[in-house]
Length: 528
Image (cartoon, rainbow, N blue to C red; front, side, top):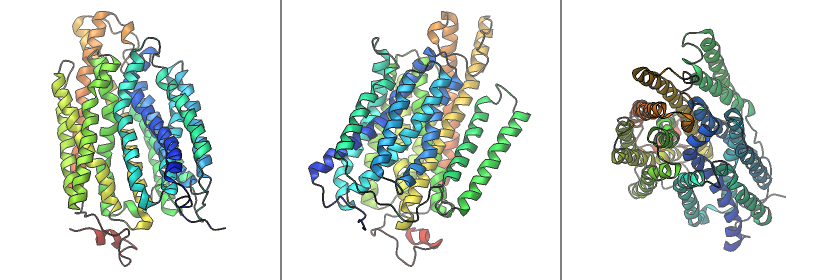
């Protein structure tokens, strides 16, 4: 029996599609909000668990790393097995991990559970898109995209506010940031089990590159662990550095070789070797750092460095979210109207760098108007760059490589965000430790035990008032330092975009047949 590519398109009514879509959008919303809802509550969570700055960073990094590494695998599994079954398994993983995170008794336990939660989050984000693509034809998909955009917008803007309100509510507390999505996730599971009826179409010849994904994840993980502990637990030049960096280089080198020989690699080297995808990937690293690093460390700045409540912190991060939503909408319309992509990416990269430079000037008593303006500019830069970089790549590859190219740039953007959070977190921990030590010495106060490593404890309530003021100032002053580093990295993104070929939106679904194969494909779609 041979099933068509889109088996349900002609059989399902608008109502049936909406019934299944309601469950899909609900579970996508919960997967997205599980990150944003925690971002503002995280300072309170780590403080309550007596965690350190390094552990704060790894609560975020662990989930990002497993999400990044597992997303391509889930996508390939969807070509091999029942999409509905995989979606239900992913929901189960997310449910169990969320429950475990809510009951975590210390930060190592929370980090481990967040890594498992990241597996579920990565699966849900990719599988929902795969199911929608298989359920609705391209011709009809446009009228449903508005629902998808609305869900993403609400999760992005509403997550920090909801997380702040839950954390500040005395009869709830931070653990409900993990517990609250559970009943809604269970409801989504019931809706999808009853309404989702999608034929399982196995694509012949599909294989899953498990070795490549494991090698990339292991190589990057070891490198991030080294970044976290160097200077605190051992020196830059030491046997630990030699072993960890050497192991990372070897694993990533083997991963490159594996990706060059397997039939369906996680990272298709033949695509990313081309000029446009390679430069777009390089520029995406800066965007990834802005998306993840900004939300993570700005929430901490407002609470630890400025003393605001989680709810107030969520409200103060709105300018960045607003900048992303408005600029992405406007630039998207302008790109569609003009057919040109590069000018908007270039302007977005420059705006992003300027935003980082504004934020690099802030300290523990900077005007909130200036901080808000910097966040708005950063958000505008992200909104103009993020999706347009993907669009530039999609318009320079043939249809048969569209998924591989889009997956590659998404993979590297997420990987860049993971590395960015880890590196900036390590820099912040070291800077905070130095600032606290200096501040305590000036005040004539002995350094408390545990303050010499990892940025010290984030349990502000347990600190006496003179030390609390010094710690707040240390965090407030150190945050500007990491945004200066972000600005320097964003300059690399500008340089990459400058060398990006002029890309125009093509009218055809695929590239001309004579230009599709080989390295000449991109050239056919690029106007220099």
